[in-house]
Image 1 (cartoon, helix red, strand yellow):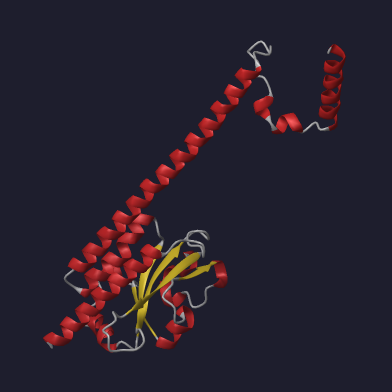
Image 2 (tube, rainbow, N blue to C red):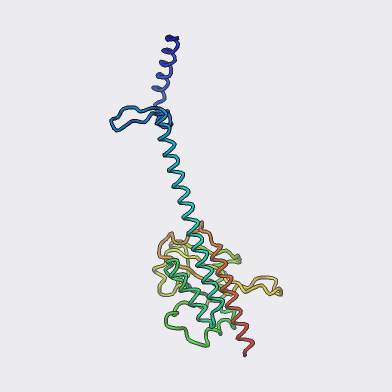
Length: 245
């Protein structure tokens, strides 16, 4: 038996010498040591490894929980902005809520609105009264072909990073040099059941100072929901204005 045992130990030792990465890759098999450097036991080493795994798992769970809590905060903030837009009593008040509040809540460098010149009744809604000083260069009226050239026909936001975005001046005015990434969210008139195609009326433009503030991989569902509510508010005020006149 001693001969067989010695033979097996020699084989194991020889194999470990030929495969030096085995034990480092399997630390749970190594015994732990005390402060004096002496080996305590193999079981203690395995217990220590399990504890490290539990700590790593706990850190991952904490990160997931924190992300869920942050997502809930973001959802509540978007909901509050949408509610205030619906309750707004004037066109410029809606513009103020849609642009200034996302900036303050989400640390966005600049938020603006573009409207197509094709929607004359909507444009006239804002031309009746001058913008408050705080809302200068928040609203831009653009040629319809320029809007469709950038936004296309889809409903998803157009994300542009770095210098790839053309005609930035049309969307962000004098602050354009500070914009390093942007999300242009199409605004469509609500479906009235009569028009076979949706009507593009403009865009909600969000500009970030950092190149990674907006990236193509970002989720944009909440931005699209915000843009939909904003579009409804604008068209509702346009309809009310036309009825009153």
